[in-house]
Image 1 (cartoon, rainbow, N blue to C red):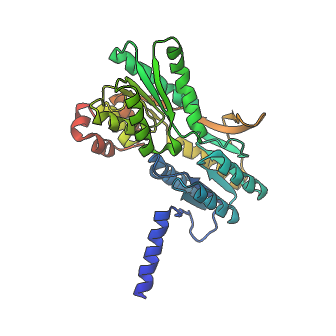
Image 2: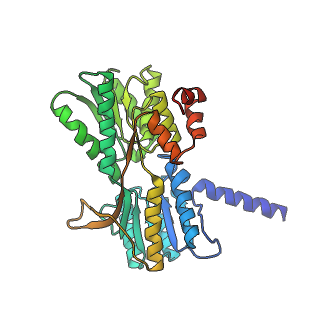
Image 3: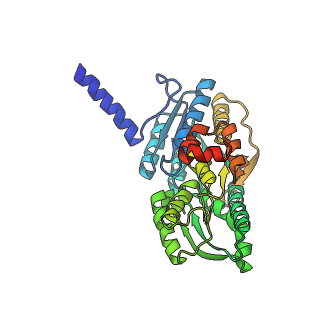
Length: 359
């Protein structure tokens, strides 16, 4: 009997390690909604914020839910999603790792009569019933404007910059770049800024991002004024390289996600600007839609999103407004919003830094 208990414990631990771990509002009942999250490495948000927020919303509504994370593995992502289709969930909420694999899953779900919601990332060429995200071009514009403002504050006359873009398979990365490039490209064309290099980071991999940025810094002859990075993971990877070269705090670096580490980096000046996206609102939008679909009530949206790959395809959407964070006041506002705790931010920044910033 003891050996059986040990074996069961080992099996349970194995499920956590592989990522095939689910959260159900009622473990005895079949799931009504399935959620497939992308990974836990590119951003802390998926496990720290999205999972618990979605689980709580479904539990409150009395909706059974199966929430799993593919841990960056596209084959695993499809296996999880197809498994949920086999379980006959009524709604699938999907954060894709790329559009082709997600489009295939959505086609299977549609054939089975299952509604799908694209969460955070639009599936190009897909068939999702709804899309819930932030104004991602707007996110990019805030990133770009933050870099411009930082360079002005530093009095840099002819800035040399690089782009450190997100994954080329993620449509959001395309939209972020569209946003920051719309702010910065006119300055490049005018000859005010010099774009030294422009690279994308496969799969939002922060380790690869650090390597790519190291190459960019070498290409720039270590004479660089700004890194337009698509999220905090990449921005912090760049900041680590800059620190090795004694340049952190001297170079403007953008980000997004408002994680404790990212906000701490705003206080230490390793990042010049980040973007706060109220994930609670995004999770509420997606869970409200799913609950409405399950219960047969009206699903409210506030706009539509065009699929650039399919002529005439527009997806009913809930689109939310991002917020720029550039200083201690912005960090305080995020903490006050209970998105992160002071303890977590100050553990990353140090207590001395927090007190000096009035936090």
